[in-house]
Length: 386
Image (cartoon, rainbow, N blue to C red; front, top):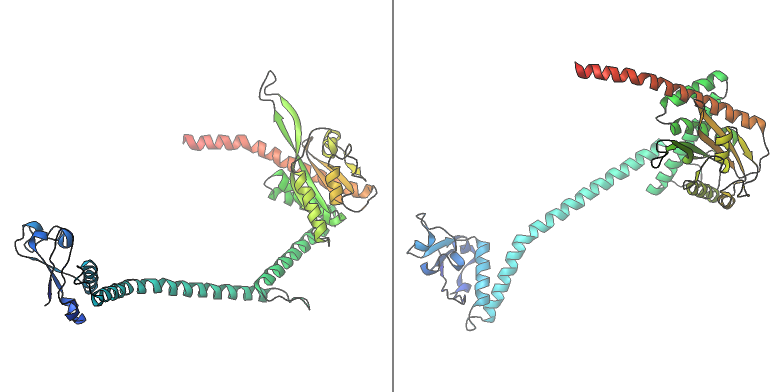
């Protein structure tokens, strides 16, 4: 077994003997012999003695077993701080080589494994994604001749196009079926209102249906919001209702250019910041009169307050219809077109008829909910009492 004596001083100078003569194979049994006066300081600090007492009380030299990597590191450190007479180029080179080998032994395996694992995981994920895209492409109809659908972006664009076409076909079929007879129309209105979670949900299918049937470019729903005075001597009294835009619809069945669709979206988005009171603008006038209104020109800001927006979007005509619930106007449905239209009584009558049916059905649901409320309260009280 090999032993190294380290001569320690206050300035941490080490005397290393015959480092070159130590075979690498013998490092596995290397022991460091530390003088007793230095145990508890420096190299042997904190190591217990063999009999379990404090390290500082052990009279013989403390013998500390070290691993080969630690021995090489200690040798390199000793060579680096050795006196000038022992700091020969050979010893310095050996210390550098030893430190380099120790660093490589400790760092190389840990640095390689994560990279290999990450690359493998990325490759598997990419293969799965490619497989899913190919499965999606196999489920879609065959693309038209001359249309390339090969890359992922092309597959996604083609999928979105097919989904839009399917949704449009569904709406067209539902519209034709609902308007084929009075019975079917009543059934359609009842189903739509029952499935709705709010007033706007009940009206939005009507907007889609009417745009599809009559070819309007876009539509809006302005909902009346009732408010009460919160301050002053009239606190608690009702204020005039405010009409706010809550739902917008564009006719996806029409073959519109991207520029026109963009202009319509700008008009609808910009209109969301507007509010109307009674007798203000088209929504306010229809709210007050409770009668439909048809405007064949939208260029006069005194008549149509959003004239600048309509002109920028190319809109030229509007039809507004009230939706009356329990005797009060709860919303205004507006329909717009970029093409000039003259007043058509049949078109207006159809819109008024459907709006009336939706208003009556929604009012009936509100009445039924109001009647169920006391029973629900009494049943909850009885359950809590029991």
